[in-house]
Length: 111
Length: 113
Image (cartoon, rainbow over all chains, first blue to last red; front, side):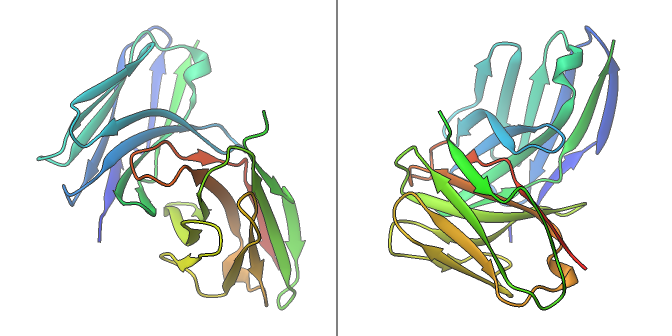
């Protein structure tokens, strides 16, 4: 069974700092990997989707990379802002009908 | 632009009671999903529907039933609620192809006492 791990579970950084969130998965036979943001009491919002054939995707201040062979992905956030405070989850798709989620990293950006 | 809409947002049930969580999407997606989210365990798939008229079990289906009423709607039913079903439930949808983005509703907080 696919296992997805996110370390650390929580992270606090001062505003303006660049930061990296980590995601690892045990089975490299994936279709794609997605990064999500979850605000307290809310659903998940998709940030970036990386297909298995891709190495990275960028959206604004966010850059996600994928190394399928080593089972790792990183989410890089540049020039962090207090509004970036949320829980970030990664999920891998191993088929048409499931995603395997990590337990998330709770990010706090301190003004 | 509603996206994925879930009702109710909050519900308290007594052990043994039944209830149905409703989900509707307005994006003409083929695939719909029900997940539960528990502290320290991430999101786990309960049931999914790859297309109208089909449903399949996910990772944690015991104690639940689903109905894909039409292309838009996918409901989750708890026939006899148990405290272990206290959780946050999320409905999601996507076009069906595994490479596409999945969209989530805002969640339903269920407490079984």
